[in-house]
Image (cartoon, rainbow, N blue to C red):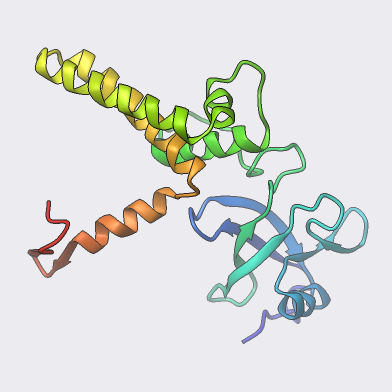
Length: 212
């Protein structure tokens, strides 16, 4: 199955992170670019401004390895799942879509936190606490996770809801830093939880091991 290039000479291509499903960019593809993508398994687009093919990452090194490709029902729009090396946007942001139009409060804060920590690793900022932890390494990060876990327990014993919320938030942040340091994605955790909490019909099935 191929795009209908007779209908449209250039078709839009939506590029998403294959793990997080975050939309990274929108570009355009002609028939030649499409065939080359199938050949080399990396994204190639047609630059409307330069009027020529554009191999994403050829100059920056930020290649996009294709993990999946889908056509819409009209065969005139591509959805491409990629493993992104570096960042997708020429501004240095991981995704081109970072300008919020209206505060709809629709973001998933856990994916946003994961993305922010990953961005700090690629684009370190001066006086960033996240960068401090990443630079110190796993021993320091684990120490902070332990400290925050202890403070969470103390807050729970104090029966102070606001204090407990704050300590749980601190604990989760440090766990996310640890996940980044150990190359663990939020999706990995979600998949493990799904394994342990399967649902058949309306009946919950719990595993003998890893039971909730």
